[in-house]
Length: 222
Image (cartoon, rainbow, N blue to C red; front, side):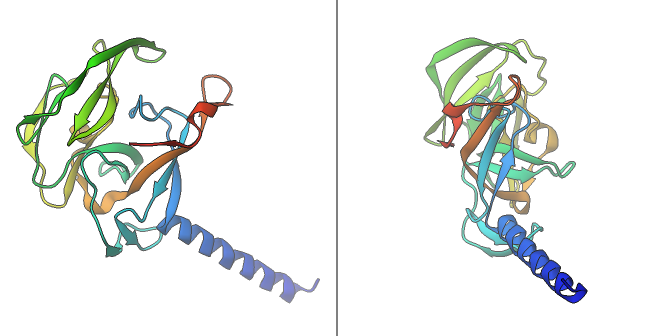
């Protein structure tokens, strides 16, 4: 094979690779979850499918919008870039622009209205956090699970009140006492939100030699 033909084939391969990675950057992606900040909804080792067209279309490999057709809602699970260090995080949108948000001993208030918890509470032991309690929280009429760890030192169980500025979002992890979220890294600018997390594609148990957790394959997120 002559040198010119080799160069042409390399160019074709490079072009194909660029197209594929650009589409992945702009349309859909998946995100590995290395921490337990969204437990019990998302576990360490989950690989989460991200719809990058949920709210807008961005220029590939950037945070600049080309077109926009929606904004995140309260309760959406989103993938975002941390405004503090640029790390990609998965969190739940708690409050949107204009909302007044407050926490009182992990009880969430939005615009002065307490977001209720279920009467059912499930105590259990977690390998990393010890004794934990799981319950259902209703945020803006939609139910999701939260995890509370009373024995962990958490300075942000009571927080606010504060108002979310225009173009910003307040996010938290469902693991309320062990999450690096807006209580610590601040509000999230709209353009730093990559897309909406839709489902767990597959999951590997890092504590047991990366064994597949089949019960978490293709599980929808809400």
